[in-house]
Structure formats: structure tokens, C-alpha cells
Length: 225
Ligand code: CDP
Ligand code: CDP
Image 1 (cartoon, rainbow, N blue to C red):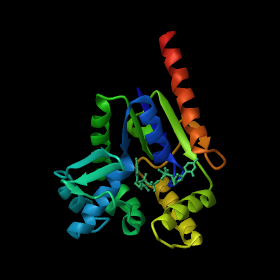
Image 2: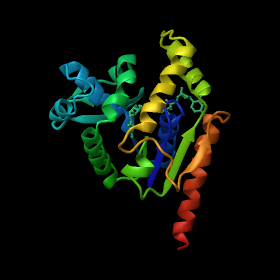
Image 3: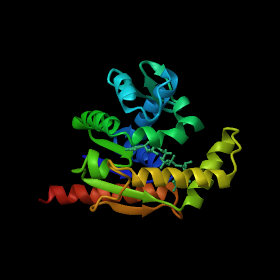
Image 4: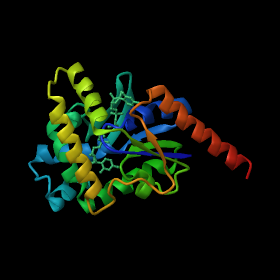
């Protein structure tokens, strides 16, 4: 079974996707982490974020792997732990430029389908229901207001000692929404058969439960066919 969870930055995708995967015993694939890793690679190698040929030349042989750990999922780039680097502001503010490059997307989609091929999976991102796994049995489109999402990021930041004002976070989130929704290749868009969940006024538990119920319904339907 494939579960696709898409939505804008801070809508709660990865939090919910991880919990749903654990509950169901499925693997979890964070596609945003893959685009973030490509962005860190470009920075490290001094390749411009818009240099498609340069990024592709380096990306072809780049190994991006995930490893579960007690503190959450770790991300490795050619064996180097980039779990923290991919969440830095420099990466966050430039990832949309890298992810808009058509050849980069093509390569990532190929890798993501490979990961999904032999596993029950929960995959989250922007184009999972529309492009990566169009046949996914359950598709979720998560939304929340910009204000709610900025407040959530602020709370996470404060816990890490980062004091970026909420107003700046709102601007950054709105800008990333704009870039991710307007790019030419597989923009952020709700799939026609996706269920929209507005998480603004829902608890994490309520969201997880809503998705588990959709999965159970789907399983019943398939069994009765
Ligand atoms: O966690 P957050 O919502 O901030 O972002 P993310 O899921 O880590 O994704 C980071 C960036 O990668 C997004 O802003 C998109 O530009 C890009 N992305 C994408 O283009 N397609 C995906 N399937 C996943 C992420
Ligand atoms: O992956 P994405 O960027 O969509 O969002 P996330 O990183 O999973 O969630 C952003 C923050 O919102 C996290 O700190 C979650 O704990 C929080 N969250 C929440 O407060 N209420 C929800 N219903 C869902 C997520």
C-alpha cells in the first residue's frame, strides 16, 4: 500500500507521516530531505543553486540514504551525516530554487519510485499524489494557514535557540509556497483524488487517526472487491 501526503511547508506532513508509518509498520520516505540534501551538496561544492548542469553532474553519483535512529530519522550524503545541515536556514531558503530544476526533479522522482517499488510506504512531499505515486491508494493534502505554520516553525526554532521573528517566518513561508506552487514542473497541487485535511485546529493525534481511518476504509473496500 502507498500513502501519499502532500502540502505546503509547515503543514505537518512529516510529523504525521512518520507517526502513520510507525503505526502501520510501513517505511517512511521524506522527499523534502532529498531536495534539501541536493541543496547542501550544491553549497558544499560551490555550485550555483540555479546551475542545473552543474548540480546534475554532481547529483548523479551522490548517495542519499536514510537511517532510523532513536532521535528520529538521520540523513546521509555519501556517508556524511547531513541531518542538521539540511534544516539550516541557508538550505531552507534556497531549496525551492534547486527543486524547481526539471532534471533534478526527474532524478529525484526516479529514486523515490525505486524506494516505493517494493515496500508499503508513507511518502511526503509536494508532488507525491500527482506525480511520484499517482496510483497511491490513500492521498492526503494537508493545509494550515500561513500564520499557524509560522507559529509552529517559531516554536520549533525557539527550542533550538533560533530567534527569527514570526513576521519574517511568515514571509519566508509565503515565499516558499509561492515558488513551490508556481514552478513549471510538478508544482505543489492537490491531486484530484486527494483528501484535504486542514490541520490548523486539529491535534496531531486527531490527524493521525483520520488517516488511519482512511487506510482502514480502503483496505475494507479492497477486501470486498
Ligand atoms: O519541511 P518543509 O515543509 O519545510 O519542507 P520539505 O518537505 O523539507 O521540503 C523542502 C523543499 O523541497 C520544498 O519547499 C520544495 O521546494 C522541495 N520539495 C519538492 O519540490 N518536492 C517534494 N516532493 C518535496 C520537497
Ligand atoms: O513536514 P511539514 O513541513 O509539513 O511540517 P512538520 O515539520 O511535520 O510540522 C511543523 C510543526 O507543526 C511541527 O513542530 C509539528 O509538531 C507541528 N504540528 C502541530 O503543531 N499540529 C499539527 N496538527 C501538526 C503539526
